[in-house]
Image 1 (cartoon, helix red, strand yellow):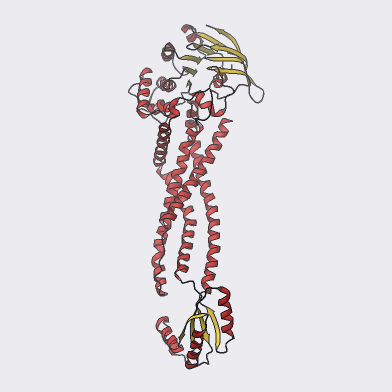
Image 2 (cartoon, each protein chain N blue to C red):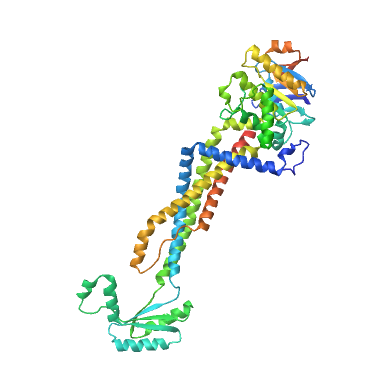
Length: 220
Length: 317
């Protein structure tokens, strides 16, 4: 599903965020990406979302080198990936429903189809009945669930999460992680960046550890 | 879009035509909704656009009106022949008959100086002043219509007439009309220049409005990009916003012009009455109003397109 082959990323000015990183994540796998702040986790996720391009090496998604695809095709690549962020990245002047519907609206689905899928996604993350609320009126954990519902509403084959439990207490964090496990169980490939090592270790999935841009650990 | 070949397949839903129009319609109305949610700001911008556009529109309508005025007058080469004051009425009548016999002249009408004075007394309101005159200061006048429109023939005729001993002055009645038309041509050129300049001003106003809107919705743009929006999808609401600004600005400009004409029309009609004319100001025609609104809309769309395109190009870099 996802494969990094000798990927390096240098930023202008010389700092090297990733050094010769290689790994592969199989379709339907669930894995964690850890490391200290500045270890290169965010850069790695940005390469997958084509927010950045690698300086060297290949980033393969679905056997395609997404580091080299033309800019006009980038949006279609992003639709294959459901992205979740630590700061949720929600539209605060839109309702929960509109936030979750966004990827479907972008893809041009019909209204009744959008309604059906948004309800299903909200139901899955436990936010049924809150369609008409605004994100700001919900708790941090609930806002993160909106973000998750938005990421899965388009049924992407892969979910990327960047510190999805960063601001949540252990109880809520565990619930969010369970949600990811549920999606993984129905076949979605999941890659989660997190520095909450104790929690990850308890869950027992494969762990990729970055340190100063290098992959120092890759086991499950 | 579908012609681009790639092994990255777009979902079928984004291909079909009805989905395409659905997105367009939805964006069209949601941008209108956004427009109406900030009515004060929107109206302010629209008013600035309307006032800017109403200036050249008003100028163009004025020129059209002046052209209509000059068009009311028959463009032939009628001339007035002023006879020597010493000529008696009988001599003048003889001359008038001679002119009538000329091949180049279709009609010659003698205006007796006494009749002319009476008419002048009646219409001018200088009754008293004229009463104080000892002699009639007016000469006999023969009005002549040449039977040709040919400029050189008419000029030759004038030269010939001026040679005649009994004739003091030959005056083309419509020389002023030619000058007016010349002036109108200059005014038209000036109006085009002003239209271009103020059109550019509207373009900049709309660009600036859209630029502010872009800044306010920066987060929204970032998020929609993250979930796979194409540049076209992101640009659409802003281009529609430019469209609405242009549409409302253009319509309001036309209303402003017609309102001004309505305000000026009544004094103009009274003035025209003094000249025995039924002339009254023409409103901006429906056809011209439509053209003007289309002009405004195209400025709106162009202004927003340039700004959004630039913004997105910088983001993608």
